[in-house]
Image (cartoon, rainbow over all chains, first blue to last red; front, side):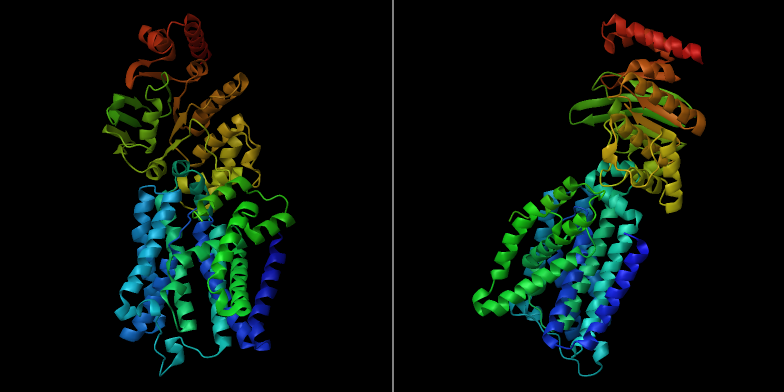
Length: 339
Length: 256
C-alpha cells in the first residue's frame, strides 16, 4: 500500500491503456473495450452512492436522460453535444434533487429509498416510450449524422478516437472516486450510512451530504448515457434506460466489488464479456440469457462474495482491512432488490 | 448562557416534558436527574435539536435555538453524547473524532479537525493512533469515544447523557473527574444527565430533579438530596440510597 508504488503502477497501467489503440487496431476488440470503459464509468458512478448504502435502482433513469436529452437537443435544435451534454447532466441532476431532497429530508432510507428510485427508473422509461413522436419510442432513436464539423457534433468514425474519449471519461470517474474517498465527505457518508442521528450529532448536515453524493452520481451517470449515445449513434429505451439497466448497474457493481475503486470496472469487464460470449456463442437463440445468468450470479455473489471479486481479492492480499465485513454485508443486503 | 423557558414536548396525547424552565450559567456543571421516563432525555434531545419542542423557548448565548437542525446547534457550540454510545464502526477511532472535529466546527479545515481530534482523544485518554479500530473498545472506551467526539466539536456547552451507565465504580469515579476536568481546564459548561445519583452529587454545582416531565426540585446537591419530594418520587422509600446520596453530596461540598 505504499503511495509511490501505487502511483507508479497507475502511471504504467494508464500509459499502456493510452498506447493500446495505436499498437492494436482490431476494431471489434476496440469496440468491446470502448463499451467496457463507458459502462465502467456508469457503474463507478452508481457505486459512489451504492457504497454508502444509498442503493438506487433509478440510475437507468439518469442514464436515459443523459442519452435522450443530448440526442433530442441535437436533432431538434441543432445544439452541439458539447452544450447538450452539460444540459442533459443538469437535467439529470435536477431530477435527482427533486427525488432526493424529499427522500433525505423525510428520512426515507433502506428499502423504501430503493422503491422510490425504482419508480423513478420506471417513470423515465415510460416517458421516453410515451413521447414516441419525439423519441422514437421503443423502436429507438438515432442522432442525425453531422454534415459539417465532426468534432463539434462529437461524432467520430474511428474507434481510436472513441477509445481515447471513453478512457478519459472512465479516468474522470476513477479520479472522482478517489477524491471522494480521501475527503471528509467519505467519513460523513460512512457515518450517515451507519447512524444518521449520531452523524447529525457530530455536526453533519445529513440531508446535504446525501444530496451532494446523489447529485454527483446522477450527473456522472447522465454523462455516461450521453457518451454511450454519441458512440453507438443509436439508443433505445431498453439499452440506456429503465429498470433492466438499473439492475445491471447494481449487479456489475456488486460482482466487481463496490467498495474499491476498480471494482465496478471489473464488474463491467465481466458483464460485457458475458453478454458478448452469449451473443456470439448462441446467437439469437440466447437473447435474454445474459439476464438469466446475471440473476443467478447476483444471488451467488450476495451470498458467497458480498464484497465482489476485486474486493475479496484485495482482502486476501491484505488480511487486515479495517472495514469489518458485517457492515458491508448489510449494505449489500439493502442492495438485494427482491430478486 | 442557556435559558430555557416553558419548554413543552408532547408525543400525541402524552406530555413528556411539561413547562420546564431553567438557566445554566457559564462554567457551571448542572446535574439533571429523575427516574426513568421523567423527560430527561427528551429535554436533551430538544436542546441538541434531535426533537423540536411543542412549545417554549431555548435561548443560547442570547439567540433562540429551539427547533434548529442538530448540525446548526452543534455549530453554535452545543455538543452532546448519547446515552448508549453510537460510534461509527466503519471508521477508525481517530476518524470518528476527526469527523466530529470537522463538521462540528463548521467544516473549516481538515488540519484543524485532526488537531482537535488529537487533543480530544488525549483529553479522554484514548490512543491517537490513526488506524486503531473501534471494535477494540469496551464499554468504558466507547463512553470515552462519545465524549471525545463531543469535545472535538469545540462546544461551549456539553450535554452529557447518562455517561456512566455500565461502568464499574473506579471507572465511574474517573469519568466524573474527567467531566470536572473538562470544565476546569477547557471552561466548558456541562449539563449532566445521570441515573447514578451518588457520583453525580459529588461533582455538580447544582441539581435539577425531574418527575413526570416536570421540574420538582432544584438547588445545591446537599439541599436537593434532603428535599422530601425528591426523596419520595426519585428515591422512593429506600432510605439507604437516600443517605448514601446525601453523604456523597456532603463529601463533594467538603472537598471544594
